[in-house]
Length: 155
Image 1 (cartoon, rainbow, N blue to C red):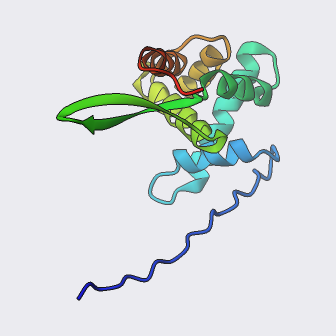
Image 2: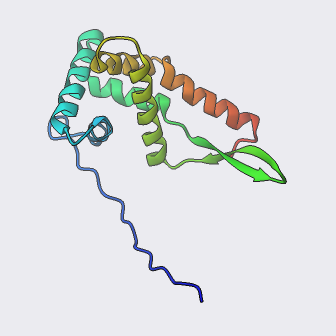
């Protein structure tokens, strides 16, 4: 006799906005930077990065951040499906929240791969580049969209 499993419903936890900038996106980045429960360190790193953006561009760092996220957020993702012994990449449409999380992940990975000595400088430079439609995160999004177009993009 098969055992029945009782599934718990998982409710999506609402992300509270950042107390300084009153932005939900800042809080999401801070949670992605968090390591070993050291939230103060992640917060300080993000503040330094936003100050670097302000000093380099003389613009509001939140506007630069939103522009960078708008340019790097993908609308599709590639999932592989096995059909008849062959593996095909199939494009699947993304909801906004999942696309935003992918964009944040790509930006942080690209910032960690940069060669400047500190992560706050790298993150600031990657956000500035992404807001100018350049940088590794933007190119990653373009690459995903190119693969999706080649494999019958979802409308």
